[in-house]
Each structure stands twice: as structure tokens, then as C-alpha cells.
Image: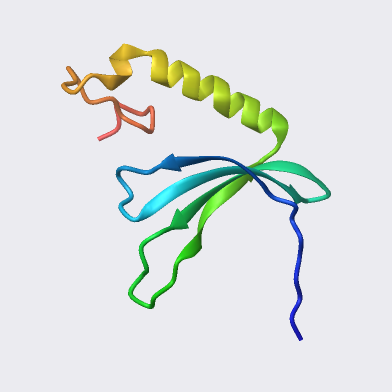
Length: 101
């Protein structure tokens, strides 16, 4: 018995993934969770050791509001030249607790 599900996915853009050789990022919308979602999926072009090509388990879904927040964050990050400096003056701790030893 084969169960098939139609997620009515619509591919919007294929983004090359330079730092993930053999993969590309697929940006699409899909039916999920009784609504329409932004579906970001990593797609394998070069066969794995076992010969697999296609969508990997890596990816996530966002609501439209979450997608808008992601868009705003990405625009801010891409446009901030300081974030793209190759040499940084100081190490910025990710936890926010710089005084802990």
C-alpha cells in the first residue's frame, strides 16, 4: 500500500549553495498544517554514498508572518557592510554572557 500526499508545492526559486557542494536551496510554497507555508528545502544534486538524489531532511517551513520576518532580517544582514567584514576587531560572544569564566 502506497500513501501519496499532494502538498501542491510551487517552486519559486532555486538558489545555488556554494558552501554546500552538490546541493541547492529550493524556495517554494506548499500546503501544510492546514495552510500555505514557505517551504525551504535543501536538494541534493550529486548522489550520496548510497546513490540518493533529491530532497534531504534539511529544511523548514515558515508561516507568512515568519517569512516576512526572515525577509526583513535577511535584507538587514545583506545590506550591513560591517557584517561582511573579513577581519573582525573583537570576538562577540553568542550567549551574551561575556563576563562568565
